[in-house]
Length: 408
Image (cartoon, rainbow, N blue to C red; front, top):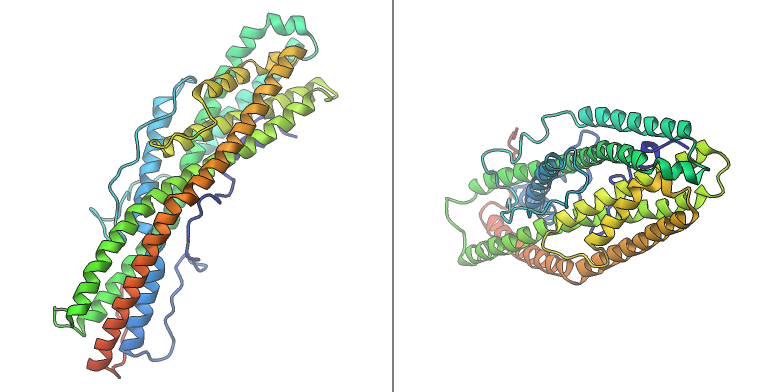
């Protein structure tokens, strides 16, 4: 078993995100989204149907609004990381994500958030990981030299000194966790941007195709009405899509926190039967680091949904857990304090698990139903508009072969 970072550095980020799920279209080996383009000659009618069906599939994933939300989330994480640098007892960041949405297929001032990905994804985190690991090794060596693992009297004498060491180590570790969240979020932005760029290309190709059929005006009154209704339905779905992304972020972080806290309880239970001082310290540091990662994830989850009060978890309880982590290395030597810390971890783990279940149920009963309804409405209107345009194209150019334009 490794100390500290080895067992817990990924607890905040590596957990899958099942609540709520995000529809994502699979990409090919080059990262491009699949196309239904036939290698055989394609009629204008078939080309329009294919393009519109591809657009409909991608629009349902709302990559534009989700991309804007994901980029705003990165900025929030960066500001939170800056504001708490070197400070342990700061409250979670509270500024809400922007209410403005980026509609599917539209660009504001070029590619949105184009500067977010300029820095290499793992450049800074390697340095932070190394610093946090060195601090953890330093703490372990000091505790071994002080010989406090099996001596209550020595542990009591060194309590505040060890607490100061713990605070310093946790400060560096917090920077590592926050940077890891930023890097994980950048990967999400890359996925969303790939889908967003593909949707833009499909829109452009479809517009060029329609320009060869229409003379700058709608073909029928029905087509105009359906197009107007579809625009409104898309706006509703896009607004909800951005909100779904926020719940996706919060749900994933909360699930990661719950998983980490379950591991913490297991680590803590193993301390008493451990055979050596080094093994005991390793288990204690693993428990502290994993629990600290869960706390950071929990704070981030609350920041992702600033207008939602997540039940079962209180600021007072989080403060109690953080206090337990600071004094954990000396409290583990005292039987009464060891049991108290065990109770703190166990209750906190249970409450976070309850919060995960609540978030899942709340999402399914509210936002998911709203989004699914909006998506169904927009999809139906898109289908009706497609059929109306297909009738018009068939009447005007039933046998024309489609020549696909070159789109960069």
